[in-house]
Image 1 (cartoon, rainbow, N blue to C red):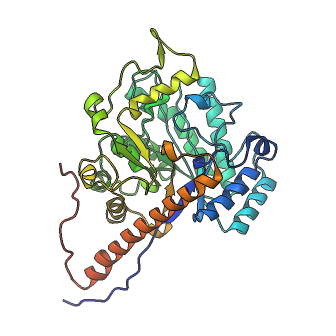
Image 2: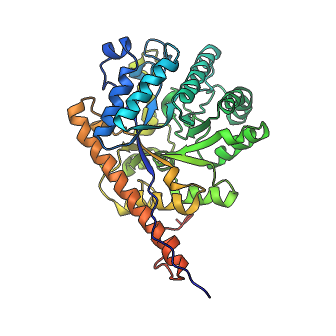
Length: 415
């Protein structure tokens, strides 16, 4: 048997930060008057914390949204302000700031319920998404990240029909612009005061495949991809390696096209009380027999989730091997190894986006937040660098020389 010597060539992923981590980096009075100032300042802030890319967050302006900030667990950020069309002049200004700071875009992000039951609200969200698509083209990025959503008045199968009717036109618009739409899989249990837990129908590999097949039938399969976030897998009792193995086994390892790097620390006491996907009761989002009309009460719908877990900013949670084994927090090293071993990705061209939603550290003060984000970005780079080195060493260097890898490692589907 002839053996060859392969070079050691680790391929780290590209680190990015979602700009919703710091909503008010630019004070509202300044950014409302000069919308693109917020992007310029975020590009500079990203450089300061050590991230070479940002995931630029767009959202309906607070004066136009149908969901008040006080009703959100993690308020969105309209860093990209699209009240006025994003034209070539605005794009040129942002591109100049990108060049000056050396910070680029991983993609644009607009997280909203695109299947919401109210037709007027749905039309407004779809029109806004088209503005995001247009901005992505002008900013020379090839992807937009967001949700699918759910019509809470309908069960799952009718939502699939609604996806075909309502979402396929959006995918056609993405295709016409040369864009990919990356779907993030949060189940969004707090989007409604109803006892519905999965309010984004693209919440797991089974639904991803079903939705992709619909897109494929309509010639827009290449536009539909997944922006995988392990925190939501943990929230639903899943583990990354098993999910990636399932996608590979089913022939859909190509669907994952980007990553949020955000964890979830599950409270075993909360799971004991309510179980995974537990509805909880007497949350505070109802007044008598009807949902409360007060936005500050509506945020209590999120207790369906927060009763059992809390978001983790990578690097801020203690290492807990038992929790990893119980799928109650993220094993970041195995996460990054599994992505390389099981998915059809080019790691060197794949974005790993830090999403900061750990409540006690989600500080809207630059001086205090900067070292926290810098630490998390450094941790993310280091853990991905370790995974890149291990994968290159084991799967390329040693494999080429016929040297066996020691041990077993974490196995999929094992309980």
